[in-house]
Image 1 (tube, rainbow, N blue to C red):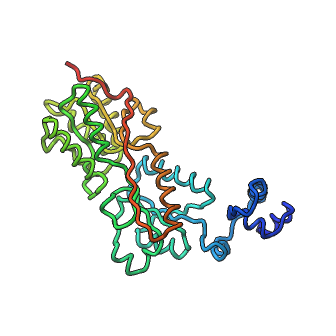
Image 2 (spheres, rainbow, N blue to C red):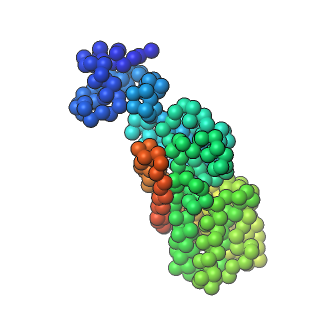
Length: 330
């Protein structure tokens, strides 16, 4: 196993200099840091987290509790977070256990902070009783529903942007796909905003305007689309709560011989680069994955510096117009 002493010998510097360089100490010149880091990487050095924590009281580890659903948007976000953490010299550990068990594991590993997702249920009282809340915790999503620091997107405003865009094109009969059977506060915010904006504009809003789905996967969007496309008067436009639902809607429309956007306009929540590569490039609303990842990383580092702080960060969404939306047919 490669040690700090091995790196010091190769670099021709002291053990102390290597240790400081690996901890990004300002007491070491930048050129020396870069040389030490390059040699450490070349030699395959793996830091001893326990030893590091004794020196700095930090391990350089951030725990991530995997979300309860498999969604492309969340997978892309976690990939981006992992890359940013590595660039900052941190290691990401991912757990698929229940929240309390995952946080307990991360605490035993002396993780500097833990990231959770708002779609997972959290027993705040139980975590407090077990002393787990002493680890800095950050939740992505569900702002206002979790008693922890939160980074979230203004999801309601994103859906209002979608309705406004479609209204500007001349659509009035608009449906929303993405009301999951399981309780999901992040989706509930979107649905409430959709209903409010439709009422505000005086557009037709029925119970069937919001389509129930088992989940937020491709097949859920597919079956929901087949349902609304079979109506006597189908909607001329639809908003989906996630990219995977949008994929299903596009496939169902193609199978039914419905052209997008000539016969049906589609807007999706989730502002991902992949939206550009769908069968029909997708008009999207939301914050970009890069902006979300950067906000999460910045907030995590602030919590590591000030573990008792409580922060709520809201990102404003944007609208990216692509080929999936057009004025309705006369």
